[in-house]
Length: 156
Image (cartoon, rainbow, N blue to C red; front, side, top):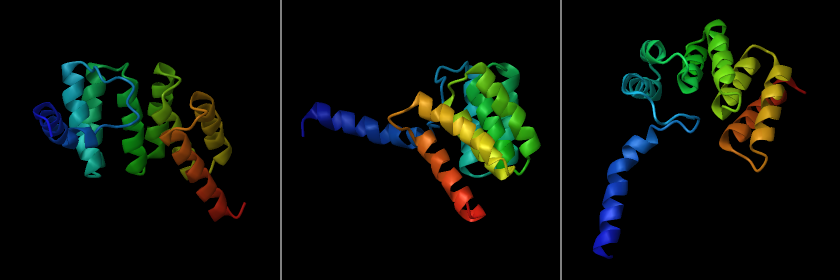
């Protein structure tokens, strides 16, 4: 192995833990420092399923930048995972208002609609994902599976 290859491998191994926390649904990786810090804290809390801490960090990030679609999306996600769909939906709506092509927000709001017993609304977001990534993407595939599972359980 050449010295350059060994150096590149070492760098990749050092970076791997931080990459594991990266959210595949992020659309803005150049966050302002205050938002980045709170956002990173929220992602750690989410990884630990500490929804209360995630929401607190995301609300701080939102105060610093209310126009960050990723923050809105994860606020919706954290509220949904904590069992509060009523609080989740406005954040998903805001994320999609800020970025109508936000793949993660379409997936997550679709999953929220399934929890709310509204599969037709979930399918509307699946249709958007099919339009935005016709060759396939994780968000589209995940929502498609969630809808299929929902329908299987409902006996449809």
